[in-house]
Image (spheres, one colour):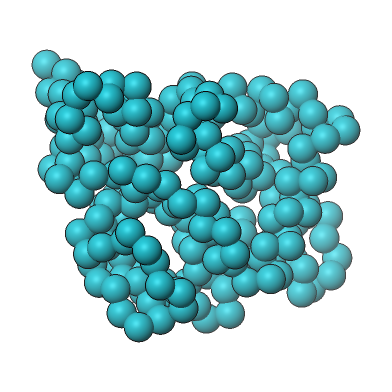
Length: 221
């Protein structure tokens, strides 16, 4: 199991806008909010430390989550705040694309020239993601957490990108069904599975797939 930060995957406009959001809402009067958000993110997805192999990728995922999904402390996401204040139509379109992005768990259905076909394990939709580069380590059947962004008629990968073991698909799908039945959201499901990844990192003496399966069995009791 590994994670890629997917550096350079975004079109320039989206990449610059994300950096601008992180810079604006990560300091000054927002500094305390950022610290509080990091704690909430860790509670939802599992706490990682600098020595962990996934630390850098989780930091990237947190920053993207914070500016695009976290509604605290003012009752709306940072990107929504920025969008409400934006007067430039082009920049507003960029922010709108980020604000309507789609983070979920996907199964890799196909790897075509210039695209990756994904099946959303939560919503059931199929997406053809524009990806011109060769994705090393990605294979058909892999389970990934990713953020998808619609931009200029194409679907693009965001910065969040994490692998889960393909052999744990049945356990993962079972978790999603349980969380949905309990009234949970897509974010609840994605973050719960992310926490299992951290648990697997901690329990190196246990086969990764068994960590996911054991968690499923424990919840079903």
